[in-house]
Image (cartoon, rainbow, N blue to C red):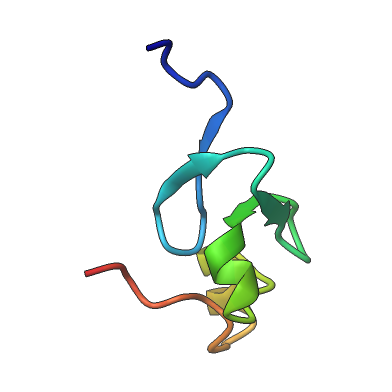
Length: 61
């Protein structure tokens, strides 16, 4: 089975997902996975911290 080549790390939760299954951060454009997006996350962890906000996903357990 070939290894996926289009994997990216979500800049909100840290999970590795296919690049086509996510959206860019509203501020800087880094990758946010589909699960985080469905949870209402619109900014990566760094941008959410800069904004002083709770828009970053909690760390996966």
